[in-house]
Image 1 (cartoon, helix red, strand yellow):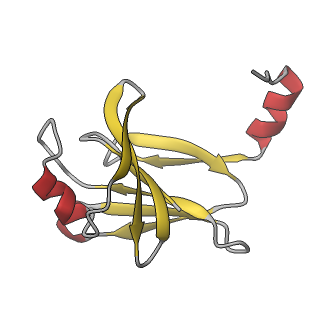
Image 2 (image 1 turned 60 degrees about the horizontal axis):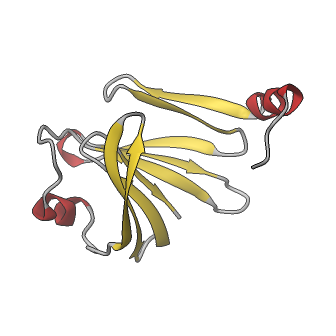
Length: 124
């Protein structure tokens, strides 16, 4: 396994920007070549797109108010109309259990997604 030295870590950190969302109590660091854009969705949900405008590569975070401890198949179908879940894998993100899977939709094409009752991420 390769290790970063202190100089490498400083170089990496100087090329990161911070995004914070107070309403949903989360934040993340993202590369400074990406542009963050928030989109208000129905029922209080938010999508944040992190996009490189030159290459059209990026990722997005979709967050919606959700009180249940587990995402039901019905809720998943509501939030992800394609219903595509390929190669699901259990993962842990900041202590929260989640499922990582590959998907596909007509807007983003092939995706890699992480879904939990506390977080949902989608990357194309």
